[in-house]
Structure formats: structure tokens, C-alpha cells
Length: 431
Image (tube, rainbow, N blue to C red; front, side, top):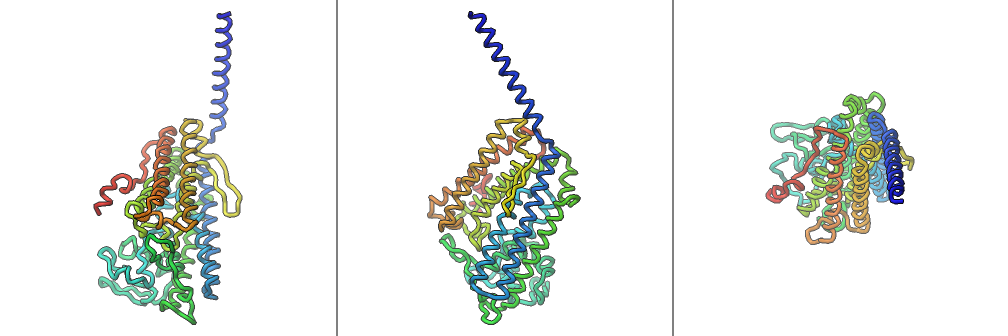
């Protein structure tokens, strides 16, 4: 009986091993090709930028109504449209740090932080000069001609050409942000003068009213807002075209081959999660308790920008994206490739992506309840600080699993972006 039992155990064990082997073979057979994963990744990029474009066009419509009829209701509608436009765009940021076409373009649409005195009037507390920026208080809205350092800038006509070719990053100073979402944000909200207390910018609608003008130069402020919005749409259309069939970004991605393309995907995921989002956009402001380090600092929309950045990383890994109309694109994914190579790594990374989203949701819910990001990072707000730190920790932990996925797929020569706030905090505090 004992011998028979042993034979039975062996038979059961053999059957289980055979079943496991069969299951593994099925999973490997079901794993998509790298080319299929890259194709879906490019399709999602196209859809994300298309949604960014259409929501920016809606923003333009609301701004047109605001300028035609400057009322508080129309200003609030434009602000709401600006926030809505941020949701799809932020999900596209996982395409940075690996796609050169995106990296070379991104500074035109989402550069930050900006020295807003370049654009328009500012509060006295802003100061009058900067050792690093001679255009710190240039105030293009108020000045048709600027002469600094022997250079004369003709700003008589405020148009797309002036903003894009002359003013943006003038004098090679990155803080001279003249274009993109944040220039528009500043024009709609004005400065946030509340520090780490609740409250966003509060620009009066009469700053755009030709018949009851406040702030001076309402005609030029209107021209700036229109030109910046039109330019944003032009830039987004360019990126939509770049991801279409035979577009520059899609062609460049496919030319890298399967390994190079997958490396690009994981570089974008890991660099955004760690160096950019966990570090520069979140931990740095928390360390310094400084609202000037807040990403959407005029509108107090930072919590949603961070949420959708994290969502974009998850989209890339899972190979799916929910469009603004509620439809979903879903196809061959990195997750499926990692699952076939290292199931435990895939399960772990999926779990950590969910934990990050949950931490971001807590931050967003807290902000919507009246405690936005600049309040949460305040020096005397330990509970708020912990909410932000939880998001940083989740992103950092997520990145470790992204690195494991890189190993599982046997991808070499990937270098993820770092941040002194995470890698060398003493140097930040010493500045």
C-alpha cells in the first residue's frame, strides 16, 4: 500500500508538473510580441495627445467667450476648461525621457516654474530683480519695448511669433516661460499670494475688460492670452501629427527595434515616477515647504496634475488608456511581456501602481476638501506632510519594481532620471 501510495503521489506530481508546464506554455504563447506592444504604446500616445488637443480647443472656445464678454461666469468657465485640459496632457508625460521628439518639444507646452513677472504685473512681494534673470520683471503686457543688456526687444505686437521665437526662455533662462499651459494659467488666475494657506490666484475679470480695465493694458493682456492659447493648440497639433502613421515620433520609436523601443517605454515610466514626479515635483517642495515649487501653482490644481502623471505611468505599463469621451484603448502591454518572463515581478509592479494611485487619490481628495498641495507641504502641517510623503514613498517603491521589470526583460543601458531631493537631500538643504 505504501508503494502504491508513492506511485499515486508521483503520478499526481507528474500531472501537476505537466499542468504547470502546459499553463506556462499557454502564457508564453499568449504573450504579445514586442512590436505589438510598441504599436499599442504609439496608438495610446496618439489618443492621449488627440485628447489634449481637443480639450485645449475647448479651452480656446471658453477664452474666446471670456474676451467677448468678460464676466466672472465666463472667467470661471475658462478656468474649468483649463483644468480639464490638464488631465489628458499630464497622462502623456510618461512619453518623456525616452522619446527625443517629445523631450525636445515638451518645454514649449509644460515648462515650469516660471518667473511670472516676465509676462504681467506682479505683487510687490515678488521683488524687482533677480541675479539669475534680467527679465524677471520685464512685464511684456505693460511694455512694448524692452532694452536689457544692450538688447532691444520689440514687443509692440503680442502674437505667437513674439512668444515662441523671442520671449520663451529668452536669454537662455529656463524660468522665462512665455508659452504653454502655465503661462495661460497665470493669465487666468494671477499670482497665488496665499503662501501655504488655502486659496489660489484671484485675478479680477476686469483685467480683461476693455471698458472697465484693471491692472492696466487690458488690450495687451487679452492679446497675450489669445496668442498663448493659439500657440498651445499649434504645438499640440504638431505632437498629434508626430504620433500618426509615419509621424516623426512613431517612426523614431519603431526604428529603435524591439529592445530599444521597450527600453524607451520603461525609461519614461521610471524617470517620470522617480526623478521628476517623486523628486522634483513633490519631494523638493515638501523638503523646502515652499509653494513656489508647486507645479500648478496659480490654480492650486497640482494634486490632479500629479494624479494624472501617475495614471499615465500605469497606462503605459498596462497598455490601456481611457479617453475623455469614456471609451478605452486597450492592447498588447508591457505587463503581458513581464508576466511571461517573470510573473512575480509583474504582479508586484501592478500592485505598486495601484498603491501609488491610491496615495495620489488621498492627496487629491484632501486637496478637493480645501487643503491643496501648497497647504499640505506647509512647515507646520505634519498630517499634510505625511500625505505627500506617502505619495513620494509609493512612487519610489514603484520605481524599484520598474527596475525589476527592466531586468526581467533583459534590457540594458537604461538610466533613469534622478533628483537631488531624493538622492542627495543634504545638497538641497545647503543651497
